[in-house]
Amino acid sequence: MLSLAVAPRQERPKTAWLQRLLKGTGWGRQDWQGGIRLPGHKDLSNKTPIQSLSLAGVRLDIPLVNGRSRAEACVTVGQAVKKGEVIWRGPAGTVWVHASTSGVVCGLGEVRLAESDEPVACVSIEADGLDQWLAARAPAPSFDPAQLADFALQMGLVGLGGAGFPTGLKLAPRDAELDTLLINGAECEPFITCDDRLMRERAADIIATADYLGRVYSLKRVAIGVEPNKPEALASLRAVARAAGSAVEVVALPCRYPAGGQPLLVKSLSGRVLGPGMLPAELGLLVMNVATVYALGRAVFHGEPLVSRVVTLTGHVEQAGNVEAPVGLAVSHLLERARPRAGERGVQVGGPMMGRLLSHPEAVIGKTSSCLIVRSDELFPPRAQSGDCIRCNRCVDVCPMALQPLKLYEATNRADRQTLQQEQLGACIECGTCSQVCPSNLPLRDSFRHAKRTIWLGAVQ
Image: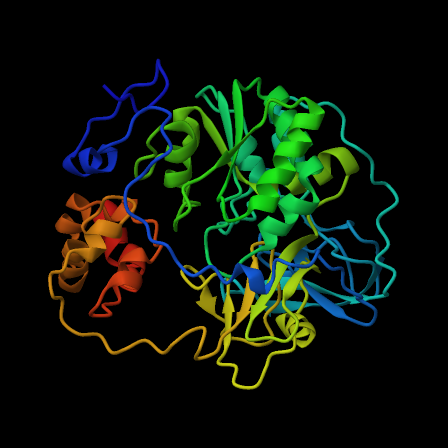
């Protein structure tokens, strides 16, 4: 019988939904049901190396995501700062914020984040063009798990795969014993190639950091999952691991969307089942995005806090590619570099499946801003008007979480909390596969996302 966790963890009861999810799987097997194959559009931006940016005269509005007021900034207007200098320091358990480049503080105000459209407090810096690091940078000493967790918070590390969860909180010791590190290099959404280029060009740093985490947590297994539509990334990681004598496994994932969803990655690489509301640590797992692992390595081995990230510029543009963008850089600056073509129809922040339309052109890049896609009617055809459900069952066939999207949709329309609970709305990962295949163009994913933020809140209280 399939165990849901490593002994001596207690196995959870198998509901009808969980039985569907487990169908056809076994411990350690790399398979899961559902999912869809999508046009990748990866070749628009993955052919050239990651580029740097000139910041002379550029203003950066660096978000203080953990801040509550302007007074909490560690700097004042007119103060000269270096790259990596702390500009906001929070209480225990919060992520510190650092200057993304060298220059002069020119304001304390508010800015919109591109990935969330939320207004947050910010520190504005007029860049001096030197991009000069703080001189005090140094490699970190040897850490135990608790010390590494605190260090990650102080270095501003968050998950770069999308959720932005503080890395230090994920690394903090728990009652459950960890035995495995799973690194997400799937990058399964169309258009996005920032992790692909990172794995091709900086594989040595990724493998070294993965080995380091294996030692700190005394792990039995470390594995990186990559979709096989990134052959250069797979080859680069494997070559580096082999040359370094590393025990890190580089595993080809199922090549279908959404292979990078956390429950699916866990299932593919470990065979364990991450149920709704469960944390990977309950299954003995530490799960991190490949870009987060790279950023952690820069912090540990080079003393560099997280002040920039690789961003994909793609879509209906003249100059697609990937750039190393400082946190707080205006989206408009990156779009000028990408040079949108005539006929553009807005900008998508993140992938076409789980991202969102840019609402405010003055928004800035945050730590989870992975991609900017300039839309066109050709790349993003206008969606037809919704019709009536024809009971074709396609949404059920493709749901990677073995849910019944139609039942959930009907329950959201009725605000039926009991049915939403019974049909496991909480297990929905909002991947949008159901909406993608619906011949009636029902707004299934958007309905579930809205229900989670409204109806579901009352259902779980």
